[in-house]
Image (cartoon, rainbow, N blue to C red; front, top):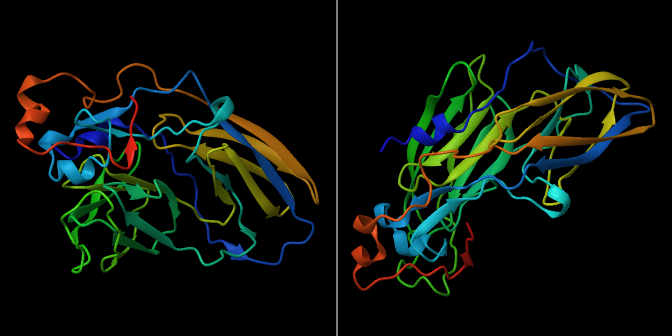
Length: 301
């Protein structure tokens, strides 16, 4: 099975506009934008991976359906349709407040990447740490709508040498040695995605930004961007599981706040070849005496 398949079935519309050097200056009488992002149309069908056919099924089954499947929960929906993990960014800002210590640390924990969505800057370093008692294989790609994916790196992610592999219940996470990579995206590509070569349901996404005017929504779907120089801009919202990129014009006035609601339409129907299906050839009985027990969390399709 090709590991590129999940990248091909999750479509991204991310056109790259003109770029310029961002200038850090003191902002006087700055304005603000706040709001909420929602998902309309119900929760999309999840991608599902049969743990029996993938390494470390018992340990990675700590988060699973309890029937041998691991779901990719790329849509986390809160009350009133609130959508988590949406990057909201203000475009066309040539100068303004400084970037504040922007860095990205991603943890591989319970066969999942955390956080699921990040922002990245070109040439910045990311740090990936293994918190699991199993090995991961980190594959990093850059991608865009018209240029497809390009491999940036492919490296093993070692676990802590003092990690005790035995014992799923009561497991304590111990950080391994960080894997540090510098992210350099070619012109025309502004999305970074990481996937584990051993456990293909592990994803982490990053959208590149060229200014510090951005926010990532939490479980309540809210966002806030402040200290904005007065002017007219384009506000853009992006989520890795939705094949639309929402842009809208916004006027920011001095010492005033603008409230905006953004609505994504949920993808309908089959989103991937990876969906739950009965297959008697790859059932739990293949594990012999072992069983896949969701000791940490039971996923609900």
